[in-house]
Amino acid sequence: MKHYVINLNFTYGLWKPQNSRPGYIHGTNEGISLSPNTVASRVTDLAANVEKQLFATVKDFEAFSIYLDESTDVSDTAQCAVFIRGVDYILNLTEEFLELIPLKGTTTGRDIFQALEKCFEKHGLPWDRLVCLATDGAPAMRSSNVGVVGLVKNKLNSLETERINFASVHCILHQDALCSKSLQMKEGMDVVVKTVNFIRYHGLKHRQFKSFLADMES
Image (tube, rainbow, N blue to C red; front, side, top):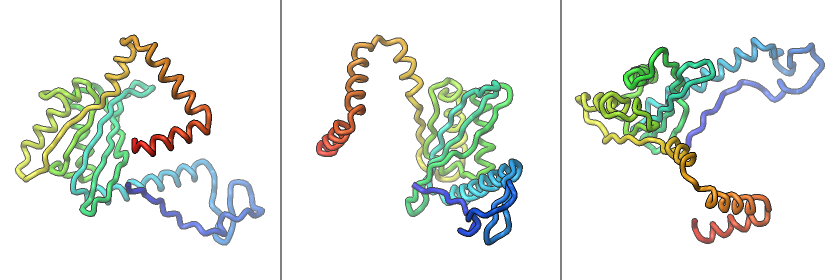
């Protein structure tokens, strides 16, 4: 898994505590302001640096997959989170949060698809290297006609270039959550919870249990 490194041109002496006025750190170099505005500016620069590295990385992907998760925040604004997982020609695997896209107005399959198209264009992602799309089970995502999956398949079928086989999957956690509320599994779950608590509560038993799993190659 590839990790991104933030390049900071700071020397060790810069962080040596010395007598200085509040809000500044002095060392071998000039002082660095720690005011809120300056810190916010530094955070923005660091984020831009990481984004630049990600832009350079995705251009080398031989194949990649996308995961979409649409939800509503506390201000009632629909947000679509886009995650990417890709591999380059030497099999370096990269998995990163790509973009958070606010959706104004409706959140139909076409709205989400159009937002995804803009995301692909912004990051320079080639459609013919998309091998998988993961979504939740909502109709706006899964519908074969007007859902994101159906629209993506139509987009890929319209390409004139040779492409990799495409697959779509959906997360089952939403269905599991709904089933857990309707199914009466208290008796079984009580046993499971007690067993897990018994193992986790005692450090020795937890270590022994991990050794047991290792011996069983589980």
